[in-house]
Length: 631
View 1 (cartoon, helix red, strand yellow):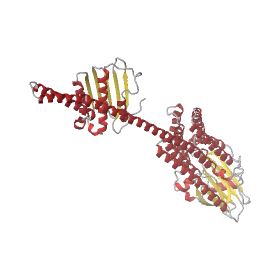
View 2 (view 1 turned 180 degrees about the vertical axis):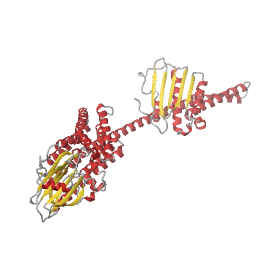
View 3 (view 1 turned 90 degrees about the horizontal axis):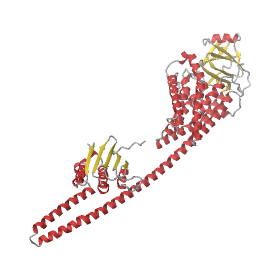
View 4 (view 1 turned 135 degrees about the horizontal axis):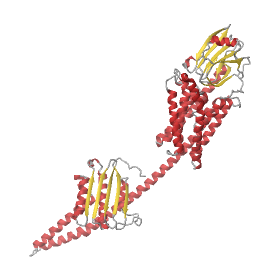
């Protein structure tokens, strides 16, 4: 299952999916490299023999060489594509004074054996490959490099990548050339890796700042992409898992498949794809299939046992990939038509990457000439450019998020100011009403009481009657002051609790005889654990609703319900009064109650019809809770 032609699977969708198709097509035909294979001027000949039995020893390979079963390999590019065979490469070269090295420019060959043949005898020089620890490589290099024996006229290289796709450009270089290449590659790999790591840190920063999943998926996506690049270039085997014999042959496809799954998540979040859309549902199916494939890749078994099945699966992946491309492209086009800017940014970034993928692939086929940098770092550069473009899109998204958040804060500030103004206005009205009550009721009653007491002090036959009237007035004054005190601060809440205070208020209203009130209280067993301000506000809301009914509704029956739920409490007040038309009601209707409900971050609905009474429903979150959105 570990397919070289799938090495671009990790490229962002649909770019990496299309790249799979490109490379799959490219591996179906022999490569024709156009770049020179050596610079030292020495004559050399490459020949190849296919061992379909996969069991030939070096002696049998040497016999095949002497009997003419090897075929010329010109140009020296071993590219059989999908194969079930093992290949033996023979290098004929006269003895050299300068130390030369054979480079097999593929970092993912499972098993290689390197022999020098002198006097008809083959001496083993190295055994290496993905199935062996990295330290077994004769030269520390990300791909495979084999020193030539200066006096040996013939070298044999066994290349085993059975049941996979095999491409291996072969070239002879000097030690100095190899060292120069190694230094240049280390520098560029370091620079490009550093850029990608900065992008990962940027994504993590945005995620921690906004808590939006799109940034988290982006950071994970880019980090996984870096893992694939390191695996693809042999850096992972060199630096991260050098002693593993299990993961090197699985690493690229594992990272690639994981990136398909993560890429769908990021793409959906980035372009704002509807979770319930048909395309998103199909993408989920792809994700499940890729998840199963990823488990099979990582399952600790020798996949070569199922070689034929593995090759069948590999050859079917491009078809499956094409179907995925169509759905994903449809999603992008659909979103772009709707004016979705992130979808357009994503498409542009993908096209940039596709250009680099195509150019590097054509270079390896010998179809185009490219500068050395783009020939070896084309895909890496394309990935970096794509990430930079997408990062600009994410930065723009973050800037929009910041401005939107600032606008929300300004709106909340304005709402808070309006709420504060309402509370101040209501308090001023309440103070005025209290002043009027003190002046009109208590003031007049105190004056009348003073007159009665003055008359009683002057003596006369009606002293007893005057004192009795004064006593009655004093009791009325006491009751009035008690009622005013309850309106200002319900002392009963502090002494006996919220439920007792509400019951006391309803009892006083019932004693007037003007209206019959039924009270239903459910819950609030631990009401003392709630903040005092919360309890007082609940009390005020019920009090003001009841006072409004008594003053304006002309109702004979009232039902008041206060119910504590798991996350909130509900207040329902219903009367059989005159009612009103909500469409004709002004914005100031029950504005004091609305202000208190808003203060507690609750919701308030009024249902009323003329001559059919009024029902007010209020839902308020319990302390530390929030209300869910209504649909």
